[in-house]
Length: 401
Image (cartoon, one colour):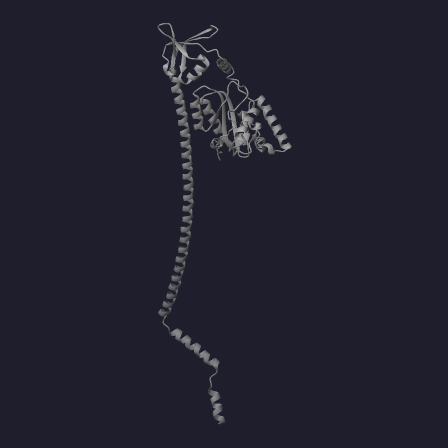
């Protein structure tokens, strides 16, 4: 039994020897694999790697295409926004051109109407005989239709007569249309208190008060119930062309402070105003001037007083206001009125043309036209203690940005 056991131990194979045999067998199997089959396996491996590479590249291209599409969409959106802004600017420019054309058309219409009125003229002979026996002969009296009322008020101061075949004076009652070209007419002014006052009014017609303080007081009485916070702004009446933009900026700021300015700020404003006025006396530097100005934090009432008024003067005043609104946003000279709404007021003693026509033109232009009593030297606005707030607010012109 001992001998059998020893024999078994002699024939048992160690594990290391077994593994070595398995490895040799695998090598033998591998070496027995044909060369073409190994080549085929390598090719398949390369093809698999190439397919994976192509798939990766395809995914990369897809990602890049998506990014490019997103970029194009962003650029298209940006271009669309730019086109929209440009179209909006074109629309605004077209609206501005239309407004300018409308304004020019209105001006041409007024000019044509004035020319037409001037063309409607009648020429006749006139003899004016006063009660004191003084006689004035006008052999070539030319009269326009729109001068008829003024002619009767200031020249004839009474009815016109013609000498009939019987030697009697016959009264003309048909107005301007009743005048006959070349006819000889006789006027006998009535020497009444009314006629004497008319003569006085005629002699003082061009004496218009430049009393800015009184004008402001009257306008405050009219405008204060309608526009809150208005105050007299005498320093805003005159604008200057000054070489120092910083001083002009400071001047505009101090003027707009109004009653809220401190004592030091008022003293600074006085120094600047004196500086500008002294320079203006040496070399004219005034860019624009009004007869009276009222201000609050966001609105200005600007006023001019005229001895006599024509439609051309109305148009010029309208242009002046528009120039202030346009230049206030970009020209330091006009910075006093930057961001301000402006109410233009024009006062007149005597209307050279038809008063109704001038008032109609003023309404079209957006100007508050007020008739004054020409016989008075001091200002008096016929507000009768009442303020037309709706009218004043409707005439406020908005600032131009």
